[in-house]
Amino acid sequence: MRGLRLIETRRARELRREATSAEKTIWGRLRNRSLGGFKFVRQEPIGPFIADFVCRDAKLIVVIDGETHSSAEEIAADARRTAFLNAEGYRVIRFTNQYVYKNAEAVAEAVLCALREDSA
Image 1: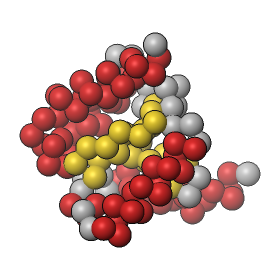
Image 2: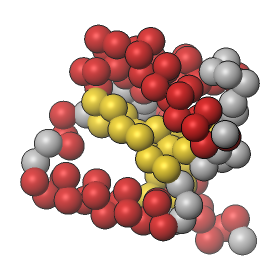
Image 3: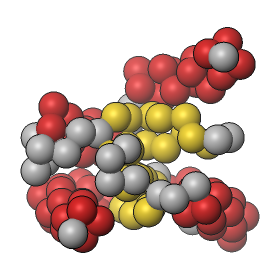
């Protein structure tokens, strides 16, 4: 079965290697169960999409959007992606690169609050 997902797996590995600085900043706060003891994985294939950060137990996805997510077409694509992920049972929260750069601790706190809401 794994061979069927080989393309997604390769792309996910590539995205892990080429992480943006905003993704690296947030990953530093999510990895090794350092945020409330919740386990996250990064660049996880889910259906036809690859989610930036996923807490599988809480079914929470954290997305870090760069500048390329500002056109009408890209916003519509993001909405379709979020709708698909919601239909799969995931909750999606989004932050921009700029917000991460200015408020990384606030992003981590918002993620922790979302995790606690989901586990309550």
